[in-house]
Image (cartoon, rainbow, N blue to C red; front, side, top):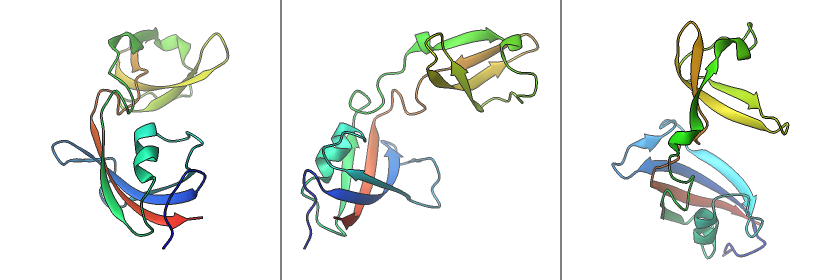
Length: 142
């Protein structure tokens, strides 16, 4: 039986739940994710807990907000003049828009509110400030 270890290329099927049991994202379909253990391309707590899992094993992994996407930062919520957005961009509450900062780095922002003159955007990750429970099934190990 194959066991996940550092350097293994793994594929997991997972659902993310909140502490109250509600599913984050879509409940109809589990997501799949492939990564190499030790490359640090996924949340550290997720990666660490996949180590030692056997093929087809399932596991519940709790990730605190600090270990996950960080605490919610109110300083990342700000107002922009509507004129800063191209006129062809349809702005609606909940839509994700990209913003390029002075260094040329692109940042995803979620539109929280808007009026005729301003757009309020949130630069926090949508899961920031939330403790998460990953229900994981190891579906491939190479």
